Length: 325
Image (cartoon, rainbow, N blue to C red; front, side, top):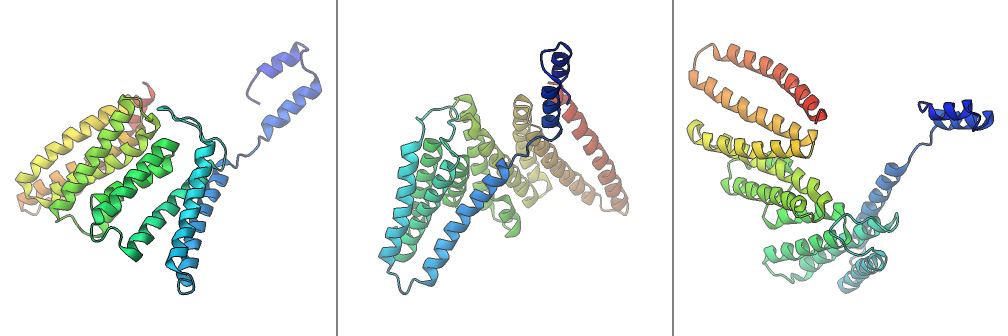
C-alpha cells in the first residue's frame, strides 16, 4: 500500500486495526479489469455473426429467394439503427458517451448489415449499373453520417476506408507495397491527395472543436498515406527531379512534427523521424551510387551503422523533450 494517508488515520485512531488490515488486503490484491477483453470478444462476436450470416445465406441461396435475403438483411440493419436511435444521447459536437455497454456493438452490427445490403443489391441486381463511383459514394456518405450522428470511432474508420475505395485505392498502406504500384503516378497522386484530405480533416476537427476525439483516426491514416505517397513519388523519379518530392516531404514533415509537439504525441513524432530516416537514407544511397567507385560499399555501411546509432539517440532525446513539456 503506497498511500500513507491510511497509516496516518490509523495512528490518529480514526480507523481501526481491522479496517487498516482490510485496506491493505484490497491494495495487495487489486481487482483485475476485464474491460478490454470483453470489448474485444464482443467486437469479434459481431464480426463472426456478420460473417456467419453471409456464409449461411451463400450456402442456402438456392432454397432462399434473393428478395427474402434482402428483406432479412434490411430488417436486421433497420432494427439495429432503430434501437440505437431510441437509446442514443442528444447529439453534441463534443464526445458523447455510449448509453450502455452493448450500444456500440449493436450499431456496428447494423452498419455492417447495411453495407452487406448495399453490396448484395449491387451484385445481384446492379441497381447502380456500371457507375461504381456512385455505388461507393452513397455508402461513404451514410457511414460518415452514422459515425458523427452516433459518435462511433469504429464506424469512422469504415467511412475513411470507404472514402479511399471511392477514390479508387485502399486505405491500408501495405496494399501499396504488396501490389507494386509505385510506378503508377495516378495511384501515387491519389494517395497523396487522400492523405492531405485526412490531415486537413484532422486539423479542422480539432481547430473547430467538432468531434475532437476523431482527430487521431484522421491524422493516423493521413500521416501514413501522405508519407508513403511522397516517398513513392521520390523513388519513382530520377535523382534531380526527385528532389522536388524531397522538398514536399520536408514541408509536410515539419507541419506534422510541430503538431506532434503541440499535442504531445510521441507516436506521431516517431512516425516523422522514421519516415524522415527513410527519405534521408534514400538520398544518401542515391548520392553514393552516383560516385560509382569501390568505396561505395564501405561508405554505405558506415552511414547505416552511424545513422542507426544516431537515430536511437535522437528518439531518446525527443522523448525526454516531449516529457519535459
